[in-house]
Image 1 (cartoon, rainbow, N blue to C red):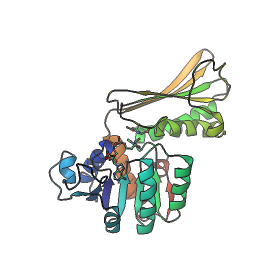
Image 2: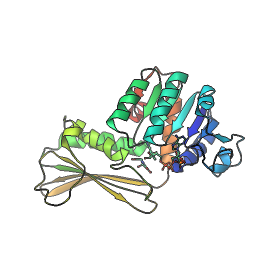
Image 3: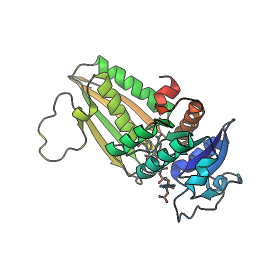
Image 4: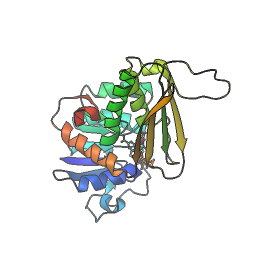
Length: 265
Ligand SMILES: NC(=O)C1=CN([C@@H]2O[C@H](COP(=O)(O)OP(=O)(O)OC[C@H]3O[C@@H](n4cnc5c(N)ncnc54)[C@H](OP(=O)(O)O)[C@@H]3O)[C@@H](O)[C@H]2O)C=CC1
Ligand SMILES: O=C(O)C1=N[C@H](C(=O)O)C[C@H](O)C1
């Protein structure tokens, strides 16, 4: 499968190139970066710390999308929405790891998925997707006297909060309780907030240093607390998940798929 990396010089872009290069049946078929990026024209393998792969990084999305089977996209929401339209036109697989979408962006991705085969997840690791399934199960089992709080920490460069993973975990908790996350989510607390409302699902985000990604779902009840935690120490877990998603999606009908679909969870 001929696959290109969008945002090839980024933290995830480099991990994706390495994952693609080591996966049998995959070819690193191109890399895209922003206009003016110092990475333009450089070999994508060298940028990722590998031997040269003979593939220069380009800023020409139209030509790139024309000659490949799929793209791995860990960039920015605005860019990803534009790439979704291009992937739909080219009828190629679009694996989306980007996070931080607005409701309007999400509506546009839904529209693109009428023609494109999209796999989108706020976290592509096996561990977090399993944790989401467990979160739904625990939330379903425990009564409303257990308060659900989701805590995350990421590196100092992360732009969006809550993280895509936190939102996935919040969504899983809400599904487990058969409620809509939008009606229960509390994203900020400051000043005299009053006592906690029963049924709320709270979010807290820490940022600092080079933390790859840590998430904790806390079920705090009377006299006891259950916590589910995931600690990522290597971006390779997300990259390998994305490559797996692309291979899984090849030949699937257009639609918006999740990592749970890919992993059969
Ligand atoms: N779903 C998952 O499993 C994971 C998701 N992520 C998400 O992936 C995204 C990227 O994270 P990360 O790699 O750390 O961020 P980086 O900023 O390191 O990388 C993003 C790259 O995309 C490039 N880019 C932005 N816009 C465009 C565009 N229009 N065309 C081509 N390239 C573009 C950036 O270029 P420039 O620097 O010039 O702007 C940059 O090189 C985030 O949303 C993050 O939350 C991260 C890890 C796992
Ligand atoms: O920006 C990151 O780095 C990460 N983003 C994803 C998220 O928003 O949850 C996944 C992972 O936690 C790393």
